[in-house]
Amino acid sequence: MIELGENRYGKRAIRLVKVVRDPDGTQVRDLTVDIALEGDFAAAHTAGDNAAVVATDTMKNTVYALAADQLTGAIEEFGTTLGTHFVGFPQVRRATVDLREHRWKPIAGAGDSASGAFRRVGDATRTARVTATPDATVVESGLEDLVVMKTAGSAFSGFARDRTTTLPELRDRIMATNVTVSWRHSGPTADWDASHAAIATTLLEVFADHASESVQHSIWVMAQAMLERHAGIDEVRMALPNLHHLPIDLTPFGGTNRGEIFVATTQPHGLIEATVRRTAS
Image 1 (cartoon, rainbow, N blue to C red):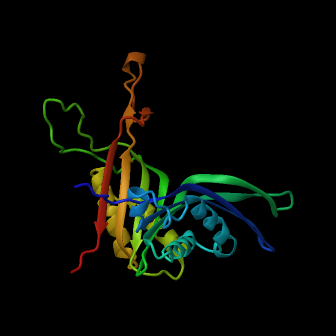
Image 2 (cartoon, rainbow, N blue to C red; image 1 turned 90 degrees about the vertical axis):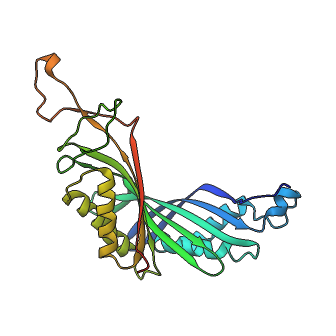
Image 3 (cartoon, rainbow, N blue to C red; image 1 turned 180 degrees about the horizontal axis):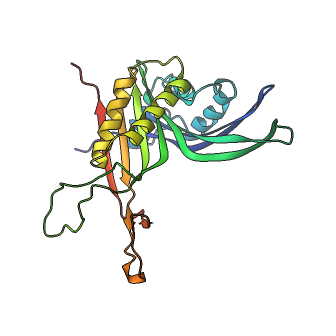
């Protein structure tokens, strides 16, 4: 017997730019939106019957149509609006909306006033995921492309060794990574922007202050602090590639490397991922 297993479909990389013009100055909202639907779509696969299919072009157009009036606050709010809209179709059991917001900063004009010119700010990208069903909505917030480095307070030693191990044990090393992090909210949040800023600040403060024994250790310490300090979240997920900085031997050139000269590498790199959550007890 042959049967259709889990399936989903949607529209990826919907690019949306909204220019908000008001007396206090112009604002640019620049989003990339992904939408995926799950539900009663078996007939489209097994019988070629598209009667229940919400066209992916319709998904794209819905993003633009709702953005005109509904994209007025945080991306978590807009994602909730989109998710709620799509589960309004009776054949849709789950809608997942992923959003990334790309920041633009005004360039000051000649008179210290906004000139309507902007520059793209590329230090990190704010993210959100909204998973909507007819009965509930779950919201996750996060960041990606957050590149950070510790030049002190980072070690890696005491790890397993065998005949193929060449890595030296280090009590003082550079640790650099490109953080992808998301945190799940336990319920609605009154101020999504303030919540996001506070949780991101906690992550950065703890990254800077703690003594790291490994990337795994850093994930645990940062996520634990995020959960302890912010009662409105119940789970943190992190993915941290270990972007190696290798010291260069300067002796062939008649010099001495006093822990100052490194080569930065991106491939190959370690990748450490973990989820830290509250327990029921």
